[in-house]
Each structure stands twice: as C-alpha cells, then as structure tokens.
Amino acid sequence: MITVQFTVRPGQGDASGFDLGDMTITGDLGTAGSAGHVPDQGMMIYLSVVQLLDGLGDFLRGNVRVFGFTAADSSFRLVVRRTKDGLSVASEDGVVARTTAGELASAVLHAAEDLARALPPEDPVASDVQAALAAFRPLVPGGTG
Image 1 (spheres, rainbow, N blue to C red):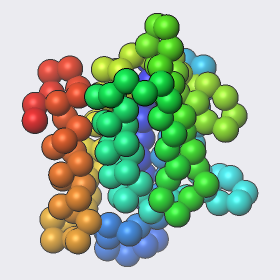
Image 2 (image 1 turned 90 degrees about the vertical axis):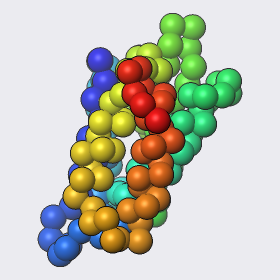
Image 3 (image 1 turned 180 degrees about the horizontal axis):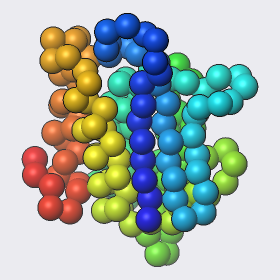
Image 4 (image 1 turned 180 degrees about the vertical axis):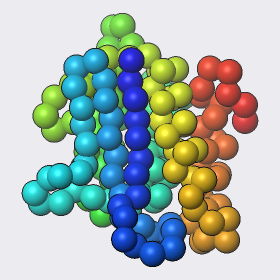
C-alpha cells in the first residue's frame, strides 16, 4: 500500500500556484517527506505536482527503468524504479514502498486532485494543473481521460 499527500504551507495568504508546500509518500517500508529538513526541502507545490504528474505519466507509459523526480525549487527527490514485481519508490533515505503502477498512479492522482481543489480557477497555474491531471487520469485503473 502507498499513500501520497500534497500540502500547502500555512500563512501564505490566498491560494496561489506559486505557494510553498510539502509532499509526503508513505509505503510499507517507510515514509519520504519534504517537511522538517535542514536545509528546508519545501517546494513550489503546485508546480512540483504538475512536474510529477507529467514525468511519472511519461515513465508509466514508457519502458525506461528509472524515473527521477526533483521538486521545483527544492532538493526533495524521489526515484521510482521498475522491479521484477512492480515498482519501488525511494527517497534519499532508501526505499519506502514496493507497489504496482496502478496503485502508485491512483495515490498520486487522488492527492493531486485534492490539492487542485484549493487553487482558484483564475490562477495562472490552474490550467497547467488541470491539463496535467487530465493527461494522467487514464493511467489510473478505472480512470477516465
């Protein structure tokens, strides 16, 4: 099992596509998160989620063995590898989950959709978020595009 959470840091005023936030990925082997590190690993969360959806989507549709993700304006990094039995998800501290493509895609999509609800539709980044979500949805079992 894998869970993904994207959060906006408090105290930034009205929601903006350039807000700082954090990612947390929890799996059967541990947790990877951007919060609480020195130096700070917070990121421009909406732009990072767009980047993650686009890059992970390309990885899941393709046949490369490794996908590396570094968040926007951050040193937070995830690595997803194809394994004999599915996928592994790791941070700098090691593997946090062994999962399937469908399970990872579903967890990322649901977290991204939850985050996107807070962004006003007139925000300049909102159209990028919605386009990335639309392109990613078909990768989720039972998803629609």
